[in-house]
Length: 196
Image (cartoon, rainbow, N blue to C red; front, side):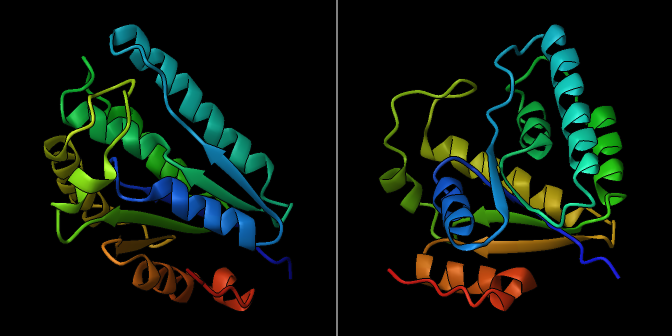
């Protein structure tokens, strides 16, 4: 029987630790590729069509890799597009495309893990958000909290059994990484250990 590859999608608000966590997985998990997506800057209806084309193409690309047993790690995907559209950062509704993409993702022949990072103590966002600019929205504690609430709502509403849902608080990175390793078998089976 063919061993399945893994899709690990890390999502969460600005300042939740996505880049750090995806880098850690890529650096420690053999046979892994990391994709860091930033979406399309166009907030208009034209941007809707561009994002639809991009993300449907991404799912089709994933499908071509089903036989490879690769581990695909994503720092943001179409989940971010849905969250940003819901929060009004875009001039369009992405619901129809999001539902289609979610169904197509769930049908892929991979072990699929959807991880949402968040902070229990949202004051930590003030310490973490020190970036100069962002293509969608200015970095601020308030924006990160709004995004966090939307991501947590979004993950709770996913009903596909083939998508394993994991919520991880990153207030303490040691606890966060240990939870991630414990929850995703390919990480624990690889003997990965987080060290500060």
